[in-house]
Image (cartoon, rainbow, N blue to C red; front, top):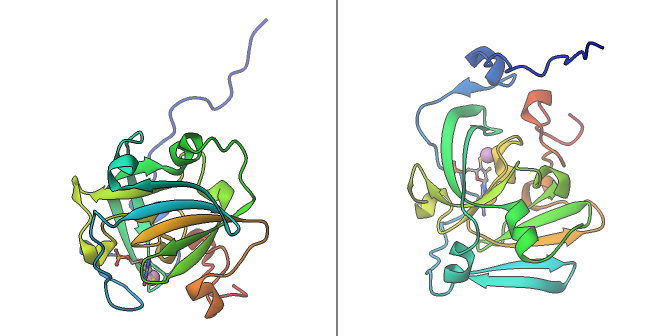
Length: 202
Ligand SMILES: Nc1nc2c(c(=O)[nH]1)N[C@H]1C(S)=C(S)[C@@H](COP(=O)(O)O)O[C@H]1N2
Ligand SMILES: [Mo]
């Protein structure tokens, strides 16, 4: 009996036009966008915490965190201010590996990322897992510069870049979708660039 394999073959690469979301323009620079001043976080003071609501589940210092499995991601990024940048190179720890290290099989449906500058942003947990997001410590093979979120930043490239919290210090699992810094100020709760979800109501 013949078995129909369907479209399991290698997919055609997307063209540049297909990779650029509506309303975006390509840039080769790497603009810096921060709501406030760049916090100076010393590696010896750096801590990354996993929380469920107010409860601490796990915590790593810099050396402990860097012993977690390392992965690389090459991805296009899209800022809501309309620039996109293709093929950015990140290295760090996938959220999947952070959850595994903490022994979490099933987190709550929503997550709030928190940062050293008191920034926060919400992302559905399913958008952080399954190889979609990481806490990055290297950009282009070098430590992430302070302006771009070093020592470590969240990278969730398939959502607008404001979801990629710079200077991250915690992921907090929440039962309900809780607005972060920009979401409280009118930006979209989800932020899919290909659906142009810039502002609440889009
Ligand atoms: N902690 C923190 N993370 C942040 C921001 C911020 O102000 N504070 N700005 C966001 C916005 S709006 C964007 S577009 C990207 C910009 O990252 P970049 O400066 O590396 O380009 O970081 C996001 N992450
Ligand atoms: Mo942004």
